[in-house]
Structure formats: structure tokens, C-alpha cells
Amino acid sequence: MGDMEVTIKEEARAEIKIWNYVFGYAKIAVVKCAIELGIADVIENYGSPMPLSELATALRCEPSRLHRIMRFMVHDRIFKQEPINQHTVGFSLTPLSRCLIKGGEKSMAAFILLMSSPNCLAPWHSLSARVLETGNNISPFEVANGKDLWSYAEANPDFRELFNNPMDCDARLTVQATIKGCPEVFDGVESLVDVGGCNGTALSLLVKAFPWIRGINFDLPHAVAVAPKSDSIENIEGDMFMSIPNADAAFLMWVLHDWDDEECIKILKKCREAIPEDKGKVIIVEAVLEEDKEGDELGVARLMLDTATMVITNKGRERTLKEWSYVLRQSGFTRFNVKPIRAVQSVIEAYP
Image (cartoon, rainbow, N blue to C red; front, side, top):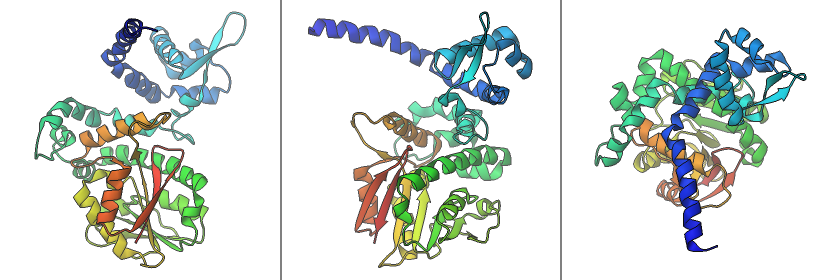
């Protein structure tokens, strides 16, 4: 194939792909619409391929508009159509649409509702300003909402719930992936402090899977206040920049990506002080960016996540293996290993 032919094919692909950017928001808007209407939930409860007429009646939707929404999602393989009889077809679920069922085992509905909310969408309009700025760590989220993410969540209970729901959702998915993918990480760990554990969802799953572990759920007062009481978990309020309760291991999931290197090092040093020198370790569940790795299907998701942290947080970022090595070494850890799991995140074990 000559260079000219390759160029023509690339240009043809570009002419098609550019339309994905022109109307890129349509995908998230349609999926958000499906979640808000409860389309996946209704079809799941129906139990068999559901005709448009019955779906429209159940949802109290205008049939022709619902048809256009469903046509889009069938084309994008979110739902599928199956014949009911010789003259009628019905809609049924796919593995992707099962992720839209509210409260489903693998549901990502809460995450989509958060990231498509006005509070989280408006900041993206300031991304170019964010990239142009130097020496200014005010996030686009703060520009759009008047407060940084954490202050805004503390002051607005409705948004706090909108934010906490996907954190619980991710905790369930990621902790299960950790338990299945590398259970050996928790061998010999008799006590575990979840730093930034919020309402204790992640820790409760861990102590259920590994019942020999005594758990400590550690977070700011307003976060710990909503954590349920448990015989196997002690809820302790505090500031991870000041001190962290002692335990055999410290556990941090989606905490360090909210902070810059300097603040990460401060947190990790406090973790190091909290664990035994001889047998202690820190277990970090975070994304590890692997640049130019072929066949990494979640690579694009990690890069999008990194961009989102730039928009939503003041100093947050996702890190490459080299960047993780830097913050861990600077925090006094002598060695670490990375274990991939079936998630956007990986499991990092760091030792004093």
C-alpha cells in the first residue's frame, strides 16, 4: 500500500471521527437520559424483550421520542433488539446496559450522574483557561461553583450525596476486583486503617472477605459521621496530614490522585509513621498510567480520568509508574510492587 493510499484512508477516517467530537456530548446526554428515566431498570424487571409501546407506557414517555433515543442506544450497542413475534421486536439488555441499572451489582449509573451533573460539567468549559494558567491552583470546579470540591460537598448535602454515591459504587467494584485479583495482599494483615475511608464501604467489604482483619475507618468528621457502626470496624475522625491511627497496614483508595506530589509525600510519610517498620506496608489502589502500551483497553479511561482530576480538583493528577516511584521513594519507602486488577486502578504495595 503506497503512502498516498494510506493518507487518503487516514483522511477518510478523520472525516468520520471528527463528527464524534462535534456531537460527542450526545452520547453522555442520551445515557444520562436513560438512567434518569430508568430504562434499563424497567426492561430488567419486564423479564423478556420489551416492545416500544409497553416501554413507553411504563416510562410515561412520548413514544416517537423514546423510539429515537432507543434507536441511538441500539446503534451504540447499549441495548439490543430481539424479535418477539413475526411483526414485533422488543428491547433487551446487554452487559453495557446492565451497568446502567440503579443499584445493580456492576452499576456505574451513579458515576455517570455525577460526572454529567451541572456542577461537574460546567468546569470543563474552563479547561483551556486551566491549561494556560501558571502558578494558579484554583480548579475549574472552584471557578464554576465558588468553592473547591471538598468545601462545596461539605456545604451542600445534595451534592455530597451525589458525590458519595459513585464513590460507594466504585468501592464495591474495585474492592471486589482487588479481593479476586490479589487476595494475598492482605495475608498477615491483622489491622488495617482505611485512610480517607469516607462511610466505610470499602473497608466493610475487606473485613467481610478477610474476617481476621480489625478495621479502622479514618476520615474527616463529616465523612465519618455517616459511617455505620460495626463490631469489626472502628470509626475515627481526624486529618491525614496531621496523624494517622496505627495499624499493620494503611489502605488508600482514590485518595492520592487528589493531591500534588508535595501533599502526597506528606500523606505517605504519615502512613509510614503509622505502620510497623518490620512488617508494615501501605496498600494504594490508584490508576497507573502506562504511556504507549498497546492492547491496554483501559488506557484511554485512565487518561480521561487524569484530565478529569485536572478539571475537578485543585492539584490532583494520575501518575505513571515513574511518578509513583518518585513520591514513594521521597516518602521513605524502600521498595514497592504494582499488581494489575480488572479495574481502572492497580494495587500498589509499598514497604518501609
